[in-house]
Length: 78
Length: 224
Image 1: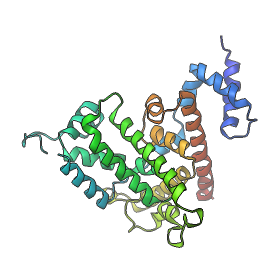
Image 2: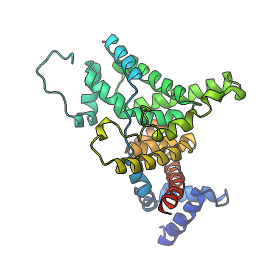
Image 3: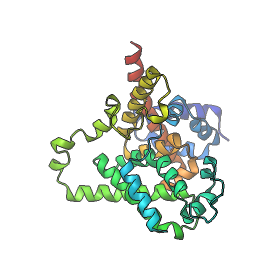
Image 4: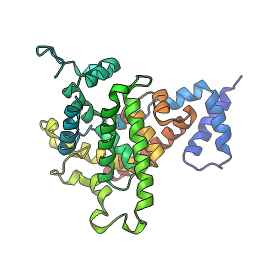
């Protein structure tokens, strides 16, 4: 049975771990906890502001030359 | 469209989400469906390829090779993974192969000849040059009616985000592009990249932290 305190510690520790500020040995314990803890997984999977910005990046279209080459290959493959 | 039904209604864009329809469209040589996919995935394919190879030209080569491999294999595609998982797996493998080839064949001193030295930064900063094509955040014809100031801010921010992505290590870049830019689920990303769920989470959060840090500087600069 996990305690909420464990999760708080892990999430605090994980922030440092992600910033590469924590001692390297910490990574193992954090990873072990994360692997087995649904609550921490869900907390970390939650999209944050950065994720929302990334989702709104424009979608560039393929350069015309490359597209023409690939469409020609597509027709040849028919 | 070569499906023999000239009066058939073209599939809606949402149909691209339907794997079965999409694979069938490609096998039936539905050119419109193929062209749509080329555009839809181009930005992320290029972002991922650029994490492995030394120049944008090489990255474009990887994207093109990937699609040629997809075309030659689509009839044998068994649908055990999703189409996009399969395509991006081919892409990552090709990009890694290209990067190994580059490391073997190109002496370090010639990696960045004068003319190419700014290849990546030109790509990343091209927002200043509205005539440059195919830059992800540049206002395109589709945005023509939008407020120019909004577009400028959007293109500046987009440029910063692209720079931030470009500064990430290849593995982090792969995960954050597929999860956050493309919106894939965690299991699908793990499957495409062959990594564990925990690794995927750590890479994703490191990548987000890297982008956040890079953007924090921009927000404080533009707010001052």
